[in-house]
Amino acid sequence: MNLRGALLEGLAKLPGTREFHVHVLVTSPRKHSNLYPYAVPRPKTYLQEILVLLSEQPTPDSPRVFVSAIEASLYHVPSTSSAVLYVSKVDSTGQARAPSPTPALVRAFLTYYVNPTTRPLSVDHLWVHLFARAQSQYLFPNSADFPGKRPLTDIKLCAWWKRQLNAVAEGMATQFGEADRIRLFYMLPGLGELEAFHSLERVYPSQSATSTPWLYGHPYCQTDVPLPCTSNGGIGNIHHLGHVIPWFDDDPKARFLDEIAYTTDAEGVKSPERKRSRTDRGTLKPEEDPESGPDKNVISTKEEQSTKAFKKVSIEEFWERMSFRQECIAGAVTGFFVMAVSRPTSKPPSRSDPSPLAPHPGQVSSQMMKRVLTSLTTGHEFPSVERAVWSTRVLEESIRGLCNGLKSVPTPGITINPDESGRRTPEPNPAATTLAPPQTPPPRLANGKRQIVDVSPNPFPEPVASLQTYNSYIYGSLTVSNPNESRKDSAEVGDGDSGITILTARKKKRAKP
Image (cartoon, rainbow, N blue to C red; front, side, top):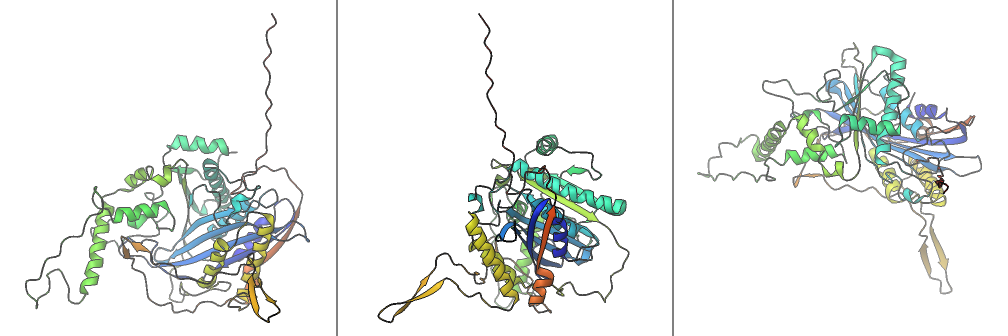
């Protein structure tokens, strides 16, 4: 079963009558060296980007409209037989029928990668990371202006994520029993264990005792599930923060790691040591190797400085200082959630195994993913039903057009108005928007310098999507016709529709004189 089929299967049990349309984009693997940028040596890592777009059609005659979206990244570390799934964004437009399909979509998405029978990677250990931070919108621009969208507050969002991960863990425990080792961790910076537990319990009380208990804290000191990155085992090579904490885009942990790596003194960034002058033109400096060159010496020196800085900060101190970071205590509660699933197999590695870079059927190129995601976040908006319907139609047609071999979608909004003089002036339609052209992002800088990237070429060409790929892997639809049920789970990501309770003032009876 592919990801598209798993998501449609997870939506099939939703109550009510409606039709869902899902678009799933998964890029082919490519080399990635920034999951553990401060580990020495860096493990070989391969990255896949994932984008899920779900649209809903209440009746056969009504137009489609986007209701939910998921953006995630899947990292593969073959050296430790591990994979890391980072869920970066989950959003909704607030225009779905009740109950919202977002929880079912998220649970089906996580279950697909957690379940070893459906997981696309043959690994023994899987880690799921996410950072919960309440915002009015994530992937759908201007969707916060829609009156029907009620984003969750900070505590409710953390409780919502804990509930979804708990449901996935319970499903795995029911299906496989003790065959899989499942560990759940969460931490709300700035809150103690009891305070965090009671804060989340007030929002979503636990119905019964779970078979997989939650541990309050970080997962980087446990030994039940091996970590994705390990040291080379040499003498004196001890784990530090760069070996255990992964680096993700737009993540507070990553920004704190960067700050520690380039801040070695309490007063701030340390100035580089002064170079010694040459005593003779014909001799090299003692610390410079003529074969390695000055660039490699500078790189090794920077790595040594970062390693020394990380060894000065323990893991417990790292999380204690995270509680005082501005983005974790800026008036809103944030949460870090981690799920670890381990199921070792007895299959030894073989040379006949396919390369981790080999593309699989249904995958698309990273350029196509970039164009669709850029168009979604910069070229469309969802403040009203009319604009959301238009944006949904344009994006869905653009995805199909890109799979059909179209280099660009024709601009439908330019009209030609001839006048009496015979001159023809194109008049752009401001409501028309096409896919944004691909642009090269600016290089990521670390301490004012470019980071080292793996520039070795990919032996496999980028996959070319076709209509067969679109119909078999990317696009799918499902008609749901189930009995209506009372809405119990009313709080959703970006769609926290809660019942309105009208309170009446009760007058106090006055005592008779």
